[in-house]
Image (cartoon, rainbow, N blue to C red; front, side, top):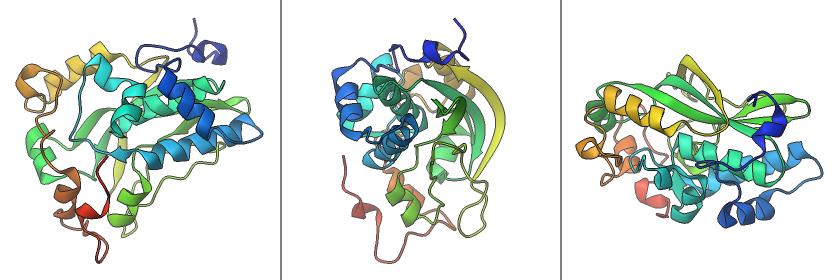
Length: 243
């Protein structure tokens, strides 16, 4: 089975669980349009903005990483939101796979840097969608409210050009640097990701488990305290309702 063959990228998988009832319902509700491209674009914005980005509340268990779990809990991070986009596209009949890269993420916090002991994020996730005869990258991680509050350029997606993070934010500060391409996969290689996280970030996972040590902290409040990432006037971390 070749990962480059679009027909192999329609089947449900363990993490990209496109046959789950919640995913099927989400896809049916949001995949609007006359063409696959239009439906994929509609799904991208639904995943990007309906689910808050929260890299503190990470659960690397199989259930915690599933696309359907993002719908259940109402938030996710780059890998799980990419899994949801891929799953929703498959549920809508659009071939989709997952892609990964190691990045230097400048939308970080002091607490994250101290816990991870680096600003390099391994296994950053995005979705890779088969549209109009070619693979197109789509990265739905940072929701619009987060971008507006902290001066980031929101990632748009038209289904024709790759949607990957900008190297700079609105003020010209460094935002995201892509360092290593890890390739494309039919499903998330969870065991490999967990093993890599435990090696690279020994302080991040609680007692060598699967839950982040940061899960009890407030990501938005910490970002608001970062130099150069001041929230918009009159809008504190509490402005976005919890999910």
